[in-house]
Image (cartoon, rainbow, N blue to C red; front, side):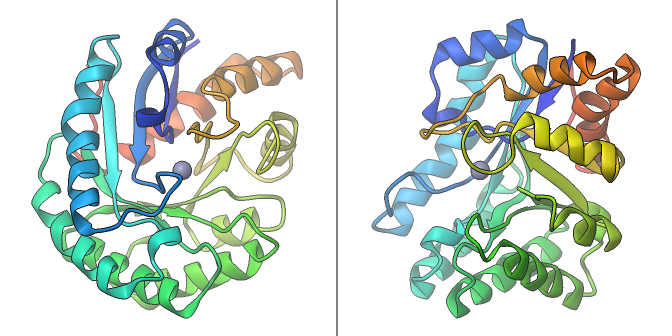
Length: 267
Ligand SMILES: [Zn+2]
């Protein structure tokens, strides 16, 4: 089996996880900037984090033969503080030329607040000005549908943004069609407890589409499984999916999206 892990927060994982991923056929891992589990106290904390994502972590992954890419932003959970968000967005451009940076993400909404919306618009503007791909986080609360609609409205309102260059992550049964119909890519996050289980993800692939869609583990410091993608691929096989179609969903689809950034190259 070969697959891409398009969304893993590897700074919070162990070297065993890297070894397991490579052993199961992982060909590349992509790491969006996210919440550290606590609020950072200043833009300097983000400066250090962006260095970690673009310097240290690719080296750590390379020790296990795994290409590592990253996405940069201030995440929605820390977007209530507009002054901090402006400072952080101000330092991102100096990192955009780094060889493993694919775009702006994971931006989006958490509680769908007014300030989060403002920071989302600032990120979308940043991406448009620098011609970057966009990776969007949708809220996990009961407001997912409302949050997804708000996010799509912001993206569609900016005429510089092309939907095929944006992926809307953490889709569920009630949001996937909205995302795909608007021309965006959709990400399904495979979590053991919340978000989307492997069984639900495969049901969605059966019901909706296997075009413009990827699956990820979004593994981080919480309850999550770094091998969720290959395990789901095994479950697809058990359910009778043709090997070629499984390969498309777990390997060729993410490559198709990510290759829109010329820096995404596999050895
Ligand atoms: Zn994430």
